[in-house]
Image 1 (cartoon, rainbow, N blue to C red):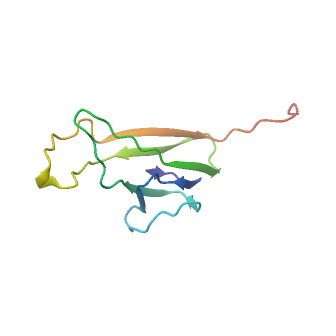
Image 2: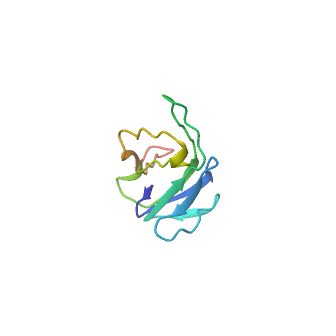
Image 3: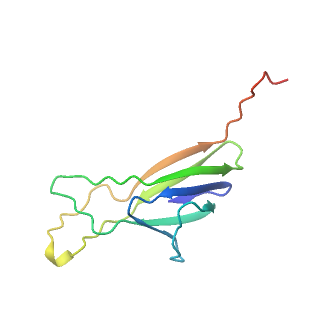
Length: 116
């Protein structure tokens, strides 16, 4: 996950996965502000995916602040899938990797009374 400059997020739950700051390997803590720009890596270990099945994991975070004028994008990319025990599994590979999902962030201000 790439959090751009001017954006601060706070992770509430990593859904049993591990989160690390890219490059340093320092862990991501929940309920702590994480200001961008920063790259984050998430690792979900010992996941069982049945043949023909899917894997869904829902971590949660909140947007704490944005100082960006206009729209900026948080990019989420899955870059690899590795078998837990390669010699004991038949791994047929994974299609469509790498794959990205983008979240556009736009700071919106709404006047409570008509703006003058």
